[in-house]
Length: 327
Image (cartoon, rainbow, N blue to C red; front, side, top):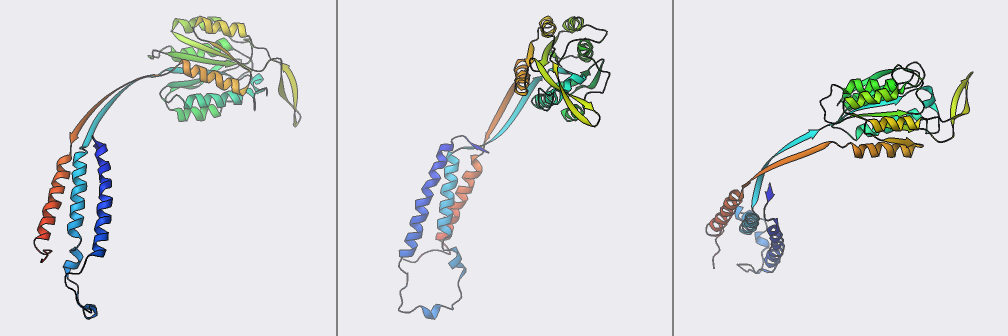
């Protein structure tokens, strides 16, 4: 229920002084029959009229409130909304080579990448998203899905050591492309995150980029890792020792992959930079949404008007029958 002219509802405030005036007038009113001592009537039974004495005033106030609501034009609304969504199909290709355990990002590169990827997934509820993992070889951790609860549970299980070590960037991209090539979505994207250079795999990264281009798939590449040296944990006996290892990211190759597929290359040297990268990709790849809304309103003042009329007639009836005053 809505009111077309809701400004009239402020007239309801006029009821306040009317009610206050009525209460004050009742206190000051003289008795119809004055006697010297009314104690003799203290135990006399009360008539039902005693309980109806204020009914005419209540009915009048109620009728006035209902008439004000009639002026405000109460309406019911029936509306329909047609939404047209064009989701984007996205494959996340994540490097899980052992170098991703370096702790220049906190707690390490892989865990930081997983956390930011999870936030990215949560922010895109309408998209099909999947995960491809790669190290010395590549496999699909989760195919394209809109069930993001399952996707987020699977991304928690991502860890280094699941597959043979190495960095097969070309294989990671090619695997992701194979999951997207049959997609009917107008926008198809691969987000590739790595911290190294391609040193394994049967498909070179640039060849994989050309394959992606042929299917109309954009590839965004992310080089993750600080500049210079990064602390890398080594298991020695029952303890962990850290060795500073050089950060070697083939930025030229990653830039070429992005350029071939009309994507972009980003460098993430810290947790905050990695978050900014995914936020930037999120802005570049927005889901298209168009909404058409139709609305039909029906006037419903008749019920309020009839109720007001009933209150007025009942007040008149009471005043001229059982509550009639003798002059």
